[in-house]
Length: 245
Image: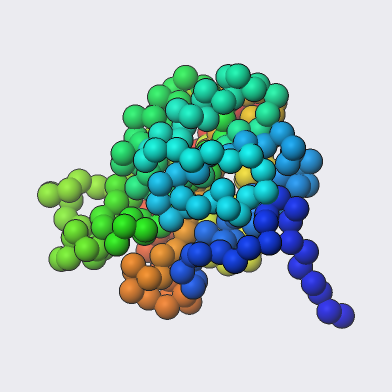
C-alpha cells in the first residue's frame, strides 16, 4: 500500500532553505501538525528569531512576527498579554536564546509568562558561520574554537532546560531530540503538552530540541544524527524537568 504524507495546513507549500540533513524542517512539520491537530491555526501567533530560523515566517501558515536578535520572548510576552486566548510561541536557536537572549528567556520564565518556546539546540551558531555557542560541547571545534572548546577559557556548555526548570514561573520544561523516528514522535508529544500547558494558562513552557548542523559540524547527515546520540545526549539528557500540575 502506498502511503502519502499529507502536508499540514499550518505549513505553506514552499521549499525549505535549510542545509541538507538539517533537522529544522522536521521540527517545523511537527509544530505545524500539532497546531492543526489541536485546531489552533486561526489563533496562533509565532515569533521568529535571528539565525537559521529567521525565515520561519515564510513557512508557517499562521500569523508570524520577526524579532530582533534574542528578543523573541519579550515580543511574545507583549502579544500574549494583549491576546490572552491566542496560542503564542517563539522559535529560537541556541545562539539567539542562550547568548544574546539569555536575559529575555530567564526573566520570561521567572515571570511565568504564558508563552511556549521551541528551543533548537545544535551546539553551534549555524547561520553566521559556525562560531562557538553557549551550548558548544567541551572539545568541540568551531570557527572561534579551532582547537576545541576549553572550559578554563570559555566555561562550560549551558543546560538551558535544567536552568529554567528552577524558576517558579516555569510550568513545563522538557528536552527532546529528533535524531530518529521514535524521538520525533516523543518530540511531537512534548510540543503538544507545552501547547496544552499554555492554553490551560499554567505559565511558561519550553521544549528544548537537540538538532543537527551537518554543514558546520563538517559531517554528512547520517554522521550528524549519530553525533546527537553519541555526544549530545550524554551531556544534554532527555526528559521532562518541570511539570506543574
